[in-house]
Length: 141
Image (cartoon, one colour):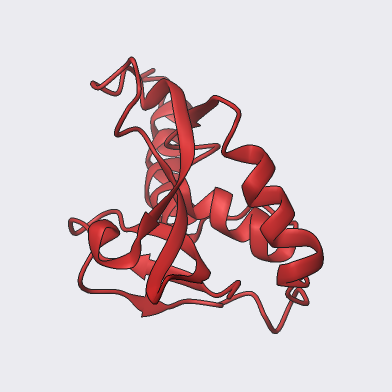
């Protein structure tokens, strides 16, 4: 419990969750989802009333890998003392999903480490920012 799981998506983005443990022999994952959101279509990369849900692992995805990629920089927080109670509490509250600032990877790293981070968004920024900078310098935008 407490491991970050990455579920491969398209070539740009994956979905992330935190392994919660088993209930009645069924493994569960806590993950930020827009599945039941009022806003099904992401408007400007945002969805109002997204939520952290606890779903069986095989409902979230059949293919996944453990991705505790910040363990060398940030110590993982204790699952039973910190992470599990936070998951139980946050599941009762609506959350705004934002692809750039609060996606499932941000949520998973926040739960495991207490730090919001999204490597996939950082990769997007690394490609977009130089392009924008060049256009600004040439006064094309």
